[in-house]
Amino acid sequence: MQYKLNTPNPGVLRLNDDGTITWIPRIVGVGAYDAYLAAGGDAIALAADPPTLIFNDAQSLHARISTADANATTIITVPLLALSGYGAYVDIYALDRANGVMKSWLFKALVKRLAGGALAIGKQDLHPAIQEPAGAPATASSVATWDYATSVSGNNALVSVTGAVGRTVDWFAYVSVRRFTPQGA
Image (cartoon, rainbow, N blue to C red):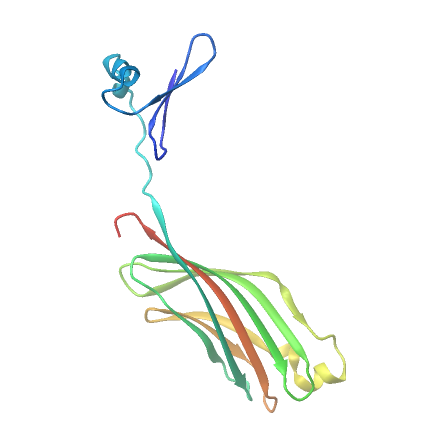
């Protein structure tokens, strides 16, 4: 029995009659491999290899903003290159300047840009939002209404945050982005 391995050093594993396994490197001109070819080794029909996905790069982004109303404000913009897929971990912190009430989120997002503009695949919260417990400071800050959202616009992925009317909320976002490109792109 023989199996083709797709490795940086391709070759053939041969299961011998005695139960041992022999590695035959795929180097033309080497006796064992030439013998394998002579025996019709490459005549074995094998499924085509799937396209390779190339890891291109990783980057870290961070930003700080302040809000004083309940309007969504973009805190992070990630430009998306053509023919690429992206995965990102996003960590957001919010702090009410007046009373120190805090809230945080951690989520993962997946976006891509193929022939056209950006397309959001989805996001998943990695844990529920962590916030100050109910009580006078949290109620005064309207912390329960603070939130974040993800979207795409043109060739960009966006993360926006929303505070509360009459409260100055300082926001910090940290994003770890990984980009992948199909082979040949």
